[in-house]
Image (cartoon, rainbow, N blue to C red; front, side, top):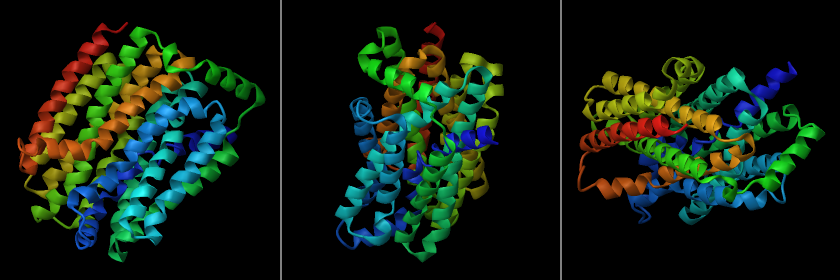
Length: 388
């Protein structure tokens, strides 16, 4: 029972890692509110992707913070900062204060982001590790799906109410405190690893491999973020439904990650190093189908495919990282890949502005990023083929 609760508690750390975009169903209402105060739609969209910038900053700072704080202390402080700042818009609706709270939200996320992933590879080995990494990927998207669904249900109460979902962080904190043990021997080993660890410890081939995976992950995350940012607009503009419908569709898209996570070990055994390329191609197809959808049922099918391939692809990236990088350097390599992930998330709104002249409509936008995703799959295949 203790081991089961420990596994559940470790996996729960990933439940709110990508929750920054869970509030996107409330974007139309937020744009209406802040538009009356003189803020543009782009400025409101920035509130969604803003935490990713501070996550990146925190990932760079983690190597310094680790000199003063243990892994346990970092995770506890990170969850407290993340949850408390996430609730600020529920009580204060000033744009500047919300802007500041979203920065702190990202800092809290950054403190636990790499730890929530590397802690799995540190505590488990072999097939057990592969399964736990798959379950961790499921936990990430399941958490986002649940929060996204809750946001859709809370919208009738007004857009400030949707931020109450971040109170879930306090429950995760309690699980972690009570059920994740840190034996004295493990703590001593962790301190030694932290003292040895820095980015210079990565040999050039390890550095290049981690960096290339970071680029691939960044592209996947960026395009998945665009789905979250634009799907409510697609559904409302095409009269397929309301913002609440969009929240439900996004939550269903994320829930398919359960299937992806449970089946990850089997898919890895079946496709081996080709899995990442296949998932990139599948994700590209899903993006194109979203752009071509004119009926809600087709859009739902496309988003289901997107959710499955996205979740499997990201989990596959961290799996390949854990297979190629030594355990004592894994936290550092994971941080590097997470920097790519969060840069992809943070730059999603800027990418939309950049490609606007090339893709002035949402249909063209999704076709364009679908093609770019297929090219990313070719790059991933080449990278894994030449890496020993």
